[in-house]
Amino acid sequence: MWLVRNHAPALFLALLLEAGCHSSTTSANANIETLRKAYAAFNRNDIPAAVAAVDPQVDWTEPAEFPGGGAYSGRAAVMSYLAQSRAHWAEGASLPERFIVSGDKIVVFVHARARLNGSPEWHDTRLADVFTFRNGIIVHMRAFADRRQALQWAGLSPSP
Image: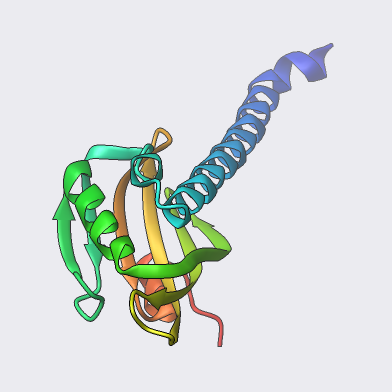
């Protein structure tokens, strides 16, 4: 009994830490599922569903070299950008290949493959999107043409 009483604070702390880790993992898994749904919605051209988990005041940045690239502020601006970029596709998809969690950020390695309207050629691009979540809501997104830069920006070391 002495052992339990004198170590109760340590035991309680250990249980809290374990619960916190589980909660963090559960939260990350829920955020990844949110992103899977958003990419699927974008691919079927359902832009409202694609931004369902986006904060009304979101900060969204696309590389300058991307068509329509630049900074967008707010859900309405992001919806407009996504609709405009998707409107040029005759067919294609933006497929998440890998999700990497780094604190409140999730790096998504994406394989975008599209054929534009009026063109027989397919365009293949491998890029990375970094999403920052707060309470299950996307508050920031930054896209990168270079996956290594995305990892660095998210505070991760790129593998060689």
